Amino acid sequence: MDSFGIATIIPFAAAMFFLIWQEDIILPLLGGLVLGGFMLSRFNPLLGLYNVAGELIFESLLNSRNIVILAVTVQALILFSLLNRFGYIHTFIRKIEQWIDSTDKLEITIFLSSLSIFIDRHLSSLLAGIFTKPLAERRALSPLKHAYILNTVSSSVSTLIPITVLTPIILAAIGTAFKAQGIEFSPMRALYLSLPYQFYNIFSLFTVISLLVFKRDVLFMKQLTEGAQDGGRVLSFGLSLNTTSKPDSRVALYGVIGSLAVLFGTITAGVLVNSRDAILSSVQPQRGHEIIFVNALFVTIVFFLLYLFLSRTLRYADWKTLTGNMYPRLALTLLYLVLAFAIQMLARRLSLSTSLAGGLIQSSLYMRFIPMIIFVLSCIVSFLSGSSPLTISILLPIALKIMGANMADPLLIDRQVYATIAAVLSGASFGDMSSPFSINHIIATAAVSAGIRRRFISQIGYSLIAFAAAIIFGYLLFTINVKPYVSISAGFLGIALLLIFLTGRIKNQ
Image 1 (tube, rainbow, N blue to C red):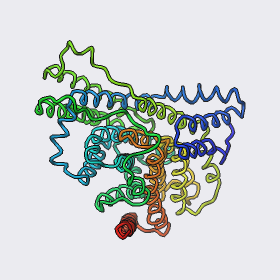
Image 2: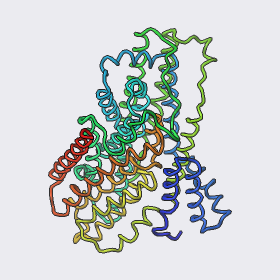
Image 3: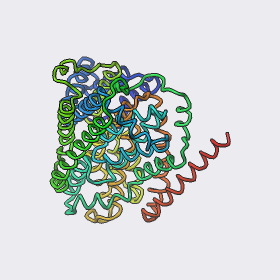
Image 4: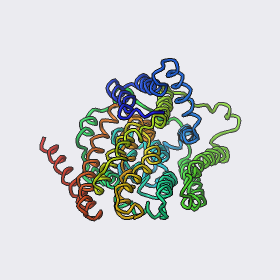
């Protein structure tokens, strides 16, 4: 299929504009999919509509990765609903509130909880979000701030810690690029050496930490959280704290702690067994880590059901009455996820990455500016498509090909190559955090029951701070051969001074 060039962005930009402007889900995303379907069918109306239903929405639901995401989401909601239905969550919250006695401590708890489940960004946002939501409701923590911490931390560490579910995808992309250029170099070693150049991810984490230290919101986050509740269209998994059942506190405490121990123990054991094969594989990505999450959640649900029977919290005679409620917002959220899957499938079918990067392959560029150009391009692709894996798997080989074409010795592996790898990974994280089409963005939003438009606007201000710091203190300083640790230190100082200035202005108002 011929490339549409820059016109490829039209369906994604149109869908995003109307989604944010009208704060709706169904019509903007369907409209973008229809536009994309017309382009795929060479503007044949009938075939275009057929492509939307058959080749985008339906085929995205057959994708194994999307199936795993839906399975993990549903199982996590079942686990939380079971814990909540019998009052275990309520009792557990009462027990730990004596340690988390302020909003500041709660924000730190959310940060650390999200960080601890670093192995998968979706699972991190989902579990940390739904299990800290009751505390956030009691402490009146803004859903926007809650979602921002979850989303930013989980997306940042997904490439900074090289043993996550994205690692096999990254290694496969690097290995493919090296093999095509005849380079014999370990993709894993290249990934490790690229870590100091992931300026956007590092600065995003520092921005979160700084805001927790300063204990004050700035920019759009401050403006939008001054209102008590989220308005407009709200994404939600339909979860709320159950205060009717009051089991024995010790039984409830052991039940929650035991369930969490089984969950994280099963995940840890599975990751340790699977990680060696995943790390050694540099050609084909392994989906073992994702399957581990499905299995771990299933084992935990079975454990908790057995615990309910053994602790006599639930009688077998009452088992038939154990049903959950279906919420309209839950259905809307799941529909949003499905349409986001289809948008990402459209980006792959329209070759969004190659369409935007095509002109760079044949261009002669100043070598030290390539990482910065690639970073900006990766941000655009991941933001429009909402897909971090798509950006990495397609754009990373292209970026390394561009760098090789502009090097005097294409077989030389040095800091220019490491910075290029890091630029793609950082740009992919930008869209993962900020795009309203990003699965992680959607999960974090729904886990805390936040509004779509307000959630996007509140996040984008902080994302742009990290973006600007990555450009100015990261990739621009890289062009004059400044060491990455000096760049990171300068970026930390610049972000800190900016936030001090902004918080100072707020105090004086």
